[in-house]
Image 1 (cartoon, rainbow, N blue to C red):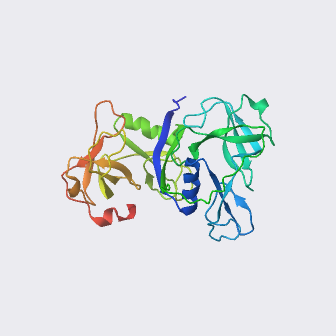
Image 2 (image 1 turned 180 degrees about the horizontal axis):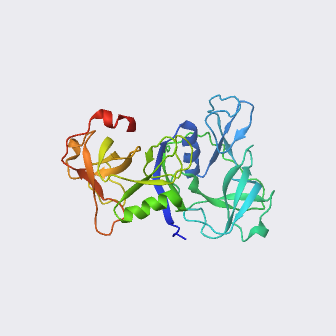
Image 3 (image 1 turned 30 degrees about the vertical axis):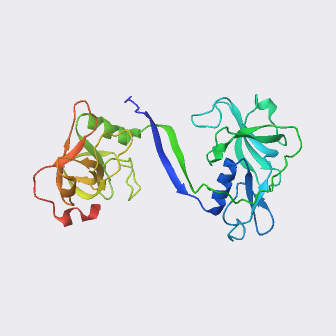
Length: 313
């Protein structure tokens, strides 16, 4: 049987967002060890707070403090904590309805084992030693057998309020390309590019997907395309990517390889970035040991006529 290709992949990026007045007050409150909710039109207190009433869609601004103690409404045990999770040892994910709130907050509960956790148990916030105005200012919850904590009566107004956050987003997974893309990858190792032709519309798709995205029928006929192609559209990259040793600015383009009916993307080199243009004829440049082209460079041919690639934009 042919080798089944697979590889570990991680998609990671910093997600930056600004905060409205409600979320700003909530996160600033956590920094100051205060938990705030918001009152709805019908008098319920929502924690975490939202900016619009989930029933009426009216804007909400009436902030109210709730206690840092509460009750577990439901839970699930996490036997194997992953990178970036609140605790490094096994813990419970819990929904906690804080005293004074009508909805539950999701966070981690530090407990010795699943037998120590149950719905209805009382818990309290364990604050992080260093707080910056983020949900991680609550380090976790911990079991608590005392009376509901007293509230300070905070109004939700703060000096030096948090106005934005940067959250690290990351997804780790194992990717297996399947039959069609495995054949494509194997061909690349021989410095060849292959697509698959749809038996119905006769279009050649690169990279192949195993099915025609237009007709929805399976594809199996392999067609070698390129190696030369035409730049259809492009962008100039001015921000240096992490772990990518390419000086900015550089150009990333959609390239319609000769014989293909779908453009693939690649970096353009061998030409000043401000001279790259639609219709530019390019060819792949390989480096020793590489399984895909390092970049594409101009061939020196005349530019392609717009009508020859307009359907691939």
